[in-house]
Amino acid sequence: MISTESAKRRPKKRKFTGNMHTRCKAVHSVDESLNNSASGKKIRLQDVHSSFIEHDDCFDGYRVFDKTIMFANIQNFASCKKCGPDIKLSEKCVRGLSSVFSIECKNCKDLCSFRNSKMLGKRKNIPEINRRFVYAMRTIGQGHAAMTTFCGVMDFPPPVAEKKIL
Image (cartoon, rainbow, N blue to C red; front, side):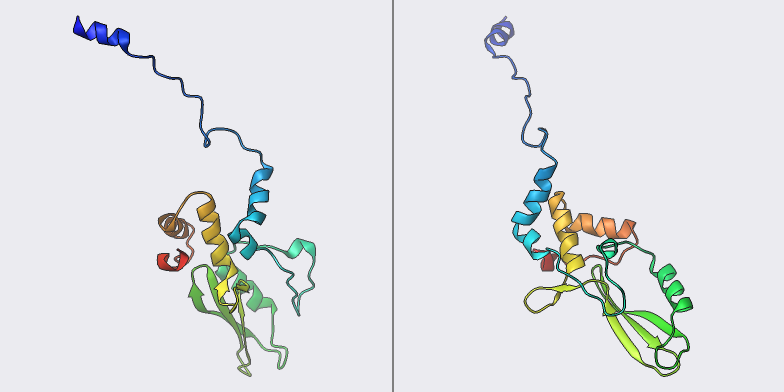
């Protein structure tokens, strides 16, 4: 009988009415928050001008591509400006998702290097692609372990070290 008396005195369990994570948010709130946050200001796009490709609006942004296919196609159709024969494309340095590529003429050994991402910061030493990747993962609530898993599944190079993103 003691248990029935205590059951009568217990208040009813409250019904769940939702919290800040289950309530609907406006779609435009994400766009507004990107421009207001410190990270959003750091990765704000700037005009990029290329000396050898005409720049238009449909040629902006980042794309994921297979390096082997891209390099093979470029090597098949491109040639050295000075002497004409074939060129060799190679990846010289990898830091997270950022890479430094080089184009070398097989005949005259003329060398040209370029990055797959522009550099940010006061000293221009932070690849934008790495900063965007860290910002994107933080935006969805994930950390370095999720970045490592994502890079492994997508066959990307490993992300930047955890101590560099804190």
